[in-house]
Image 1 (cartoon, protein in one colour):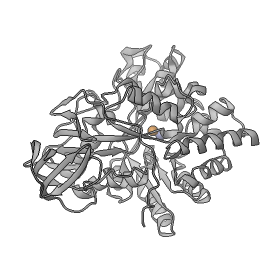
Image 2 (tube, rainbow, N blue to C red):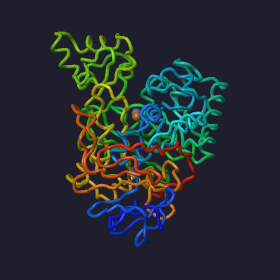
Image 3 (spheres, rainbow, N blue to C red):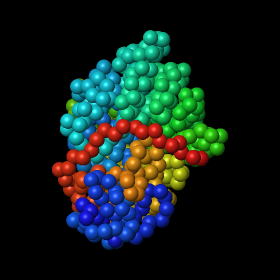
Length: 489
Ligand code: ZN
Ligand code: CU
């Protein structure tokens, strides 16, 4: 007698093949039978619904949210059962000595290493699983402070050994955020040796590349070179061409990646399905106020000027009869300016579709889990938006293929053994959804509305989301990276 069965359901197993009608049985948190199964104590009728492996959010900043918002409702409500944290160069490892990271991720570290972060998560577990990257910005601030200079040999040795011990403790690789301070001050010959330190563990190099605007192609080339020289796979984060003059550059950048793959390099990417990006405002104007960037900018959250939240800077400037620069300065001079998060409308819809058509692009929400104000709707809507708008309405990609890129592909990339497939022996991380109705409901003005059509979400066989509500189950863990296969060309 099985503990639980989901019956008469269209199974999308995560491999990319067409769905088949069948039943699945779950015992002790694992899938034990798929297809024809025996009797079960509890039965869920899956008629007319599709069952897929739980989605893996390849790019998140949920490092602090796992502890602050353990229900993780904004993720499980889209069918996400695992998040990759430590992105854009900011992560839990070494965060005790990085004030920039603590403020950016709303972390209050009581730990000194990844094992300590895991213990913190175990003592107050979240609803879903996570896997961590070591963030280079965090590491650099912890080692050199916020100084724009080269690392000394001794500092390099310290950073390398921190990376290696985090890998021993289960990190899946190293991430950089070369737009941001202090990572932007690191030359390529600092990044190669630090990335080499993940190689013996089968880790990867994940990069928010140096310049997503005019310098996109050169920056993608740099990421490819670093991965190649260090002998590890390269993963490009939130691939996009930012700024109107660069629209249409994504297909060219993808060609560079295809060429690298054809020449034997293992490369993958992630993308989110929105034309707006989002991040800490101070970081965008680190080198002065660029009015071109300010023009498409909107305030997501701003604790000291909450009435600015949800407003475009151009509208605030017009209202006050002042310049865009004046408005930016008001915000950056206010207390808690490092907490000001903005949105910028900077990408092209055609570029998003080009990304979503590419077989090596997975989905990463890149949401900032700051629930005050008007956060970017990608935090809540990314996965259901891809399925509803880009798969069902626009047919940019087939459903089985997109589910593969939300499940088995990231599971392989981030070394998540036993996840990302519906197969006997795999963990019962599952999402039951209606492919005819699934879609995002979060908008720029109503960013916290949960998705439509995501009916049941399980993590390790426990229900964490059911018909519009998070349950009280908290089965999530900080997973350890396991040596995965490389992804064949
Ligand atoms: Zn980033
Ligand atoms: Cu990011």
